Image (cartoon, rainbow, N blue to C red; front, side):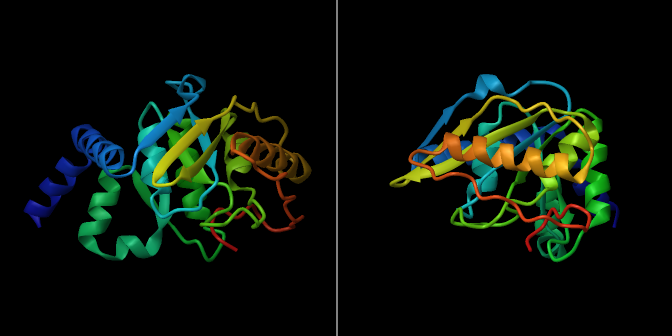
Length: 216
């Protein structure tokens, strides 16, 4: 038990995060290729939400190494059921979310981290999608409630090579459901505008329930 506590403390240290980041960056550049554009548009300090599309299983770590600062992610809670994998994910600044429901605990943890000056990465459609799925309100909701910039990001592949492109920050205003939906629609318009040969953003569906941060 004492050994596990020491291991948890070591893995959650800043050194482990940067080691994991550099290791994956070397891996993706060597075996796939990676081009990053617009890094200068991402604020280096302060709370922040980075919202992207999601089509590939490697998108989370690819986005993570592309953002020029430490970034946190939500990961499905099932991944944390394995003690060792959960420990690894915690060291890489991930925390669990129940994607099958409105996970209030995950929302509170997200707001705590953002308000504490951290960056949060989130996929606007909640899970992998070919682009046809409607966007969820989670990114807009978190940015509005924490009063932090919302950065659109687009991820795509040309052959094996990954491309990541960041857009100009969106300044969240208001707090109503209509304002949250409007911000989500603007976010997806920006994300789609960053993709090569993209189609117009899909409108999100009106909802009376609290914003969902997982898949539908």
